[in-house]
Amino acid sequence: MRYAMAVDTKKCVGCSDCVVACQTENNVPIGYCRDWVVEVTDGTYPQLELELRSERCNHCENAPCVRCCPTGASFISEGGIVKVKENKCIGCGACITSCPYDARFVHPRGYVDKCTFCDHRVKEGLNPACVAVCPTKCMYFGDLDDPNSDVSKVLKMRKSKTLIPEAGTIPHLYFLI
Image (tube, rainbow, N blue to C red; front, side, top):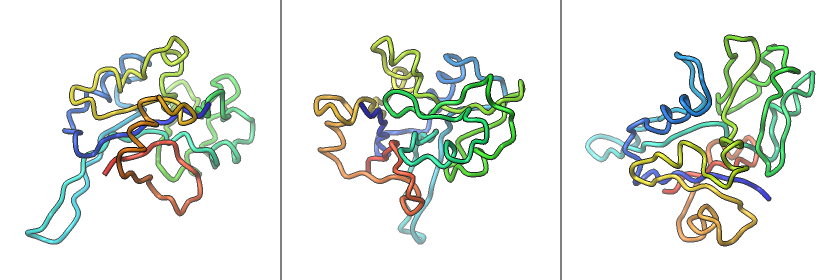
């Protein structure tokens, strides 16, 4: 089992409902977020293109945050979800520095926090909160090893990209283009 998410950059409108859903579902403190919306403009005037995408931890197969954690607090759980054991984390920030996606932050209580793909919901057969609330249905989630999962189907049908592929992290967050 390898969980993954795909975000359709043609359907995302940048509403940030995913951000609010995550903050609410996971009791993220005000002023912090586990996911965010990025607006990228590419091209030369007047031929400009705008890409909106919801970003978060990429839940990498080759996760530098896990390798560099001195206490073993950062780990890869069932389904390839990268997590942090709050009680083992010393808040040193090594994982924050090693993450090429800038997907972690130090929680006010002293441990490092990040997206977990709402694994507590996934264990109940539900989608992550961000996917569940998206008004444009631009987010797809599921098991890459299951050809019938939403994410597997959409990745077979559409061209996609990952961010910073040269980092060699093998991310499980895809952007449909």
